[in-house]
Length: 181
Image (cartoon, rainbow, N blue to C red; front, side, top):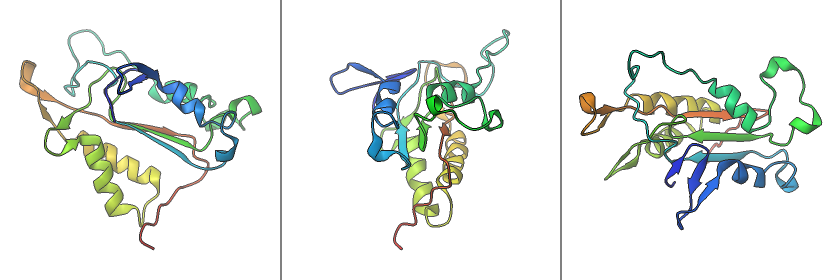
């Protein structure tokens, strides 16, 4: 939980740290003890300065980014599962899940009293469903819950801001928490 921009998160000293550097500290090349174990990252930070209004910004066509491809490139994974088995050089980042509060280029929101939407919804969904849903299923619920919220943004048309959380993973099997058992 911090401030951020696309691809970086700021430390308490205000110095930006590349997310790729953080992820690489835990990959199969640099952290052999965690190979085959799930590594979970939940990034609660802005990834830019745009406010998502859940509508096109203007008459220009919206720029389409294949986010899945971008994250797969970041994690050094093949284009998709149909590309065949991973080669040794591509297995550096397996068993990772990266959850983001918002999409690239956009702000994330928080309630001054209750905290960030993303963390609120992770907490709620995980408390309710960690006993019966996989992590991937829970993250999909988090994405749905975050997308239902609207912020009051003075100075913007219609004053409403949206947030669209997302996640990508290279988990090789379903992960269940089963708390309290």
